[in-house]
Amino acid sequence: MKNNNPRKRGGPPGRNKSGNSKFSMDRDPFFSNNKRRKKDKDEEIESEEEEVDRGMLNGGGGSGDDEEDEELTPEETAEEKRQRIAKAVVENLRAREKELEGEEDEEGDREFEKDGERDSFVAKKLMQQQLEESGRLRRVIASRVQKPESVDGFEVLVKHRQSVTAICLSDDDSKGFSASKDGTVLHWDVDSGKAEKYQWPNDEILRSHGAKNPEGRATKHNRNVLALAVSTDGRYLASGGLDRHVHLWDTRTREHIQAFPGHKGPVSCLTFRKGSSELFSGSYDRSIKIWNVEDRAYMNTLFGYQSEVLTIDCLWQERVLAVGRDRSMQLFKVHDESRLIFRSSTSSLECCCFIDNSEFVSGSDDGNIELWGIQKKKPVYIVKNAHTLSTDVDNGELKDNGRNYNGHIASSWVSSVCACRGSDLAASGAGNGSVRLWAVEGAGKGIRPLHDLPLTGFVNSLAFAKSGKFLLAGVGQEPRLGRWGHNSAARNGVAIQWLKLL
Image (cartoon, rainbow, N blue to C red; front, top):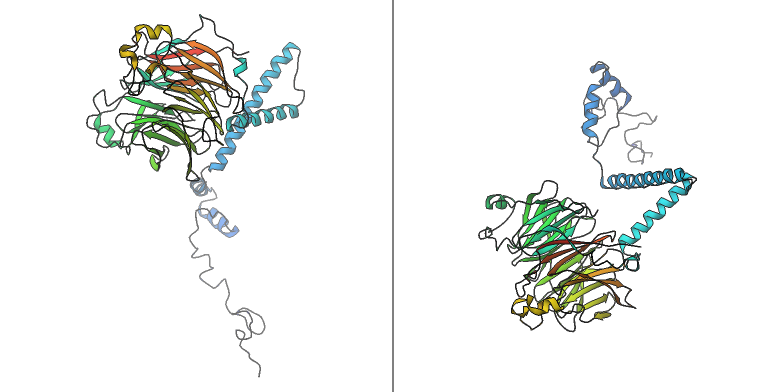
């Protein structure tokens, strides 16, 4: 017996024998236009009948649609922003090359004859710049540095009342920042030396910005600033010191915008990850904390040190290099949640700096400079007694012989090292009366001395220009982290040394 039920025969529901639909979609209130479903924000497809009806209701003007379209217009995504910035960079490079071509045409010499050649040159330039910034290609600058004349020494660019503890440069090398032991933070221009001072807010404003337990901070001793760092885009300046907080400043308005609590000891070092909003802070509490300055949020804490963290550095990758008083240097791989430990065989390490992603240099309190490679846990090359005492400093300028607890003379400590990013040029400073330039020839050949630049005082911080055209030094009468040495002949401030390249 045949089953006349279409549902049991497997036929489509809602159809009779003749195949006609029992229910009309036009009669169904779910599909009718009288009571339409609420559209999502991203849904912008409309039928022709709706457009006609809406046009009739609006008198054919369509002004209501324009307002809705403006509200529904999506914001620019991160990928679209990157594409826009990349296009702007390429267009700027093309405009520069066109200007150069115009100058060469006036002189009767034309380098580019077609737009295709210009675009290929721009592409090669961008690729070379990307390789240099990522550390895969090292620029040769050390061999081009001419020996400075006796009259072309360091010039005082900015003055401070007390010893300078930290300096940093903006990414375009036009602006500089410096801090001293009296709590002063200055923002200055490299070419003119014109400085502007950052004003510390009162305790009430600090509490509103996130500071905890700020009592005692009002004294000058507790406002001692030990570290500075500026973001890659130049928008944010971070400072840290004896008050155990990381302070965030807006470089455009020079106003205090946030205070990050969390450290249980003085904040001794700061660094931004290149091209990001991640900020790393090292402290006497033997920890390294990670902050997000855009979101004003704490992210993570890195442990592993048995003593105070003194210096940290970071490049484009999410890797942090730090040294501490436990005679170790550690490379934290934040993404992998792992670390590499490098041991110093002699004395405590005082400072460190990335040369590229696979090599870095450090200075110790016994006057040595070490070159390290990521493949070995011990230095691949050591320069002993890199900063010996000069006669001027050794003949009575240092009070109490400038000795610390373990007997090493404070003026011979390598208190600061820095490298010109993506190149083979490095510098080191101490309190012996000079700053030394070095040529980094790689892990296989080591480090070669270039020139000595006379400078009186304790060199507590160094910063190279990205182009290698000048070197900045933060100088003081005392070391950065203590008072175990004193040189009354030194001038507290920031000194600049212009370098001539062949």
